[in-house]
Length: 447
Ligand code: UDX
Image: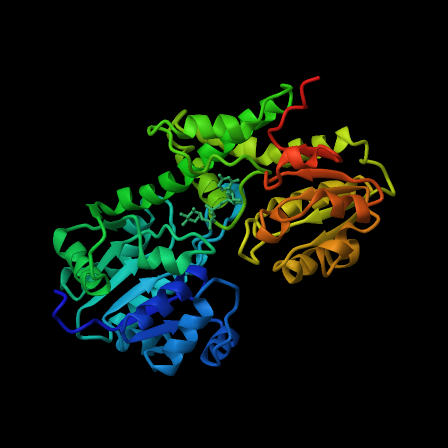
């Protein structure tokens, strides 16, 4: 395929955060695209232009492409496969027991794809986007398609994604790298041909074998997780050293080009649908190779304990007592999303409830998701002010821009006692010296 050739027709199988973002972006780029999912309700909503979760630009892209008729949605996988040349397999691989990933959805999707592709006489390229443990594509997916691969009717490649929630569409439009895992050059070249048509300037591409591509995805997320657990470990030391501030340490080491400044923001620990899941999956996968995952296990342990370290800050204000009220500002696992999967707010709320505290919460976007989880056990507020009113301690858990603007006067005016804990380092400690202020990675003022 060259950029002058006819554009392939695309189908996207599985319309979660990754699949839907890829679907709208392909359609926006002028590829005839079909999005397919087993959830009828999701499909009927998408046809009406209703998105199932918040993601910047997603709504606009969906509206535009539905209007332009370049994007169709269906629950009919057979129709989608028979009317496309290239499919992205984007079904979920949620965590199962012991950190393993649950291959149920990918196995059942691959089985159906195999059945319908058999009916097709024309070549089809199946691109595995779903994050799977190394060797899964080789051992689980490819064997199902062996006949068709031998007859050159099907090729299977792995093509991991590195999309961040909150900037998924931008990440698709401007990737730092494309990784193509292939069993022969021809298969990978087909996918490269598609990318030549997708991008005006082709991003850097690394061609490698299928298993290495799968491992690259885990390596990427595990490295990011490692940086965060590293800085959080140091932050916990700083809290015991008067006069120190983890932000200064991070700034200084980040200047070393071998380290780099990103992902060195101390906080309550990483959450979300990827970092914790992929780290646990890599640990589980590498258990079979003796003493290969000690570092990864430590990274996970540090992260699991980080919420406890935040609770220790609350202890310093002497508010861990029955009948005290704690206001939590920020529930989403990071800003600009309504996602609370593996969010630290969940763990901290559970720990505080166990201690018999009264919890009030506020988040600009994630309230409904949190309500589904905690039901009537906590108090849901519709504004920052309502959340702070008459409270004994405020705990900031997500770095929303609206929280960054908070002034000490507000806490003084509204709270019973102005105890503030900044677990995201979004407030300037110097401006908060007039109230009771503690922050992750911040040592006490030197006497
Ligand atoms: C991540 C990867 O970045 C992305 O490449 C992959 O495809 C999916 O997983 P995402 O889950 O959207 O993306 O979140 P990310 O922005 O990486 O943040 C993960 C968690 O780490 C969040 O809870 C965030 O608050 C936390 N974090 C991030 C820190 O605590 N400190 C930092 O310096 C950076």
